[in-house]
Length: 348
Image (tube, rainbow, N blue to C red; front, top):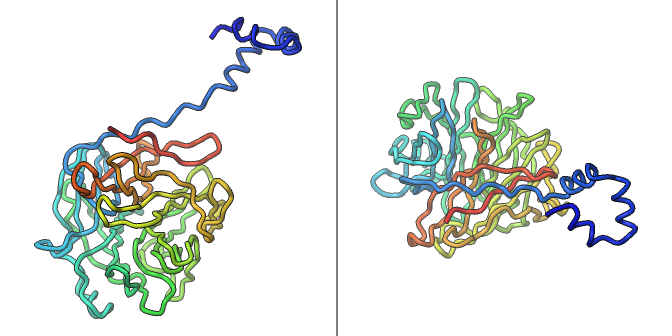
C-alpha cells in the first residue's frame, strides 16, 4: 500500500505528526507494525513412519528414531527407523530381544514389551533409556542401555544393558515411565519421567554412568494434573530458559485418542514451569502447542531434539486415513518474538 493512501485515512492531527516525521519515519513505523512471519509448514514425511513414542537422534547427518516395541514375534523389542535426512524413513528392525532378564524379578511380572525409549548422547557414549510397565499400573521401572560405537546405518548393533535406573511400586505417588535425559549446558545431566499419579518428576543423573547421581537422589516435582492424564515429558534448553513439553489426556486408542501437546517455561531446570498465562504446571498449567487436526489425531508422545537444522520436535499421531495407525511426525520448532515454541501448519 502506498504511503499517500494511508495518510488520507488519518485525522488532521496525525497528518501533522507524520509530516514532521517524514517519509523515512513513516516507512519505519510500517516496518515496526508488520506482522510476524508465520512458522513454516511442517514437513511431509515419507516411507515407513509407523512408530509410537518416538525418540530421534541425528548422527553424522543421518537420523534414527526409536519407538515402543510391538507385542508378537519380536517379543516387544524396541523398534528402530532410519533416515538420511529426517524426512524419508525406513524400518531398521529392533534392538535386543524384548524386556531384559532383570525385569520380571524386579517388577513381579513379565512385561509384554518395552515402552517409550529415549536416546541421547554425551561425548562418545549413547544412552538409551526405556521403561517397563503395564497399563494403569505404577509398578514400573526405567532401564538403560549404552553404546560406544553407535552406527546410524546399523542402529541395532552394539547395545549393552546397564540395568535399572529408577523404579516405582504400588503405594508410590509416581509412575516410573516415559524417561527423557537432558544434558544441560552447565554440564549436569537430568532425567524427567512420570505419568498420571502425582505427575512429572526430575532427578539428577551421574552424567557418565547415566544412573541416578545417588541412591537417594531427590525427585523434583515439575508438573501435575492432580492425578489426571499427563506424561511423555521432555526438556529443551533454549536462549537461557528451559521448556517442558508434556502430553495431556489419552493415548493408545487409535482414532479415539485425545492426546495433545503442551508446554511450559522456566528460568531454572528445576522449575517452576509456567504457561503463557502464568499458570503453574504443578497446578495443571500448560500452553497448547498441538491438538487433533484433520487426519492428525491425538498428537503426543513428543520429544524435543537438537539437530544441525535447529530445534525440532518428534511426536506420533494416529492417522485418521490409515485406521488410526500410529505414525511419526518430525518438525522444526519456530520461536515467537516473546520466546515461546510453536509448530507450523500440518502437511496435507
